Image 1: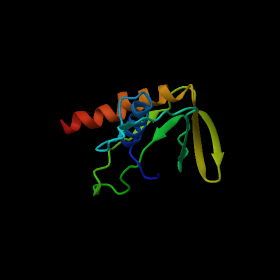
Image 2 (image 1 turned 135 degrees about the horizontal axis):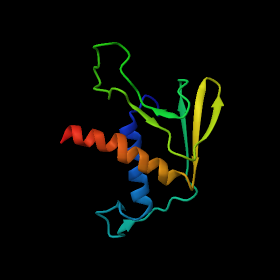
Image 3 (image 1 turned 90 degrees about the horizontal axis):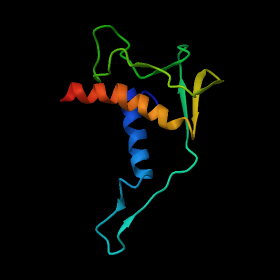
Amino acid sequence: GENYSLWQLGLLLASLQDLSHGLLHLGGCKARGMGTVRLERWRVELGFLDREAGRLTGARPHEAGKNPYSLPKGDVLAAPEGGQAGRQGLFRLLTYDDEQVPGLIDGLVGGPLRSYMERRA
């Protein structure tokens, strides 16, 4: 995806993690029962069109005073440890492999997602 907020990325990754741990079920309303899913060898590759090395950056309002999509201001997070930096064309990449993904999820859930939920409470 593109133009995502960091809280959205945290919610997506936390949901996939819960699915992998068996906390969410697929299917239902059928005689066959609920399905299960197992995620193995996670790899999360994030691409950014900025030069803010060592940081995760979400979509931000472009014009002062205008924010029609209610994007979070200052949607930036220090990149959790373990991400491998790289480049692909114009994109700055951060790649998290299997062992580093839980730290990425913890950083996004404990920061941007928690802040978003507290603002909505």
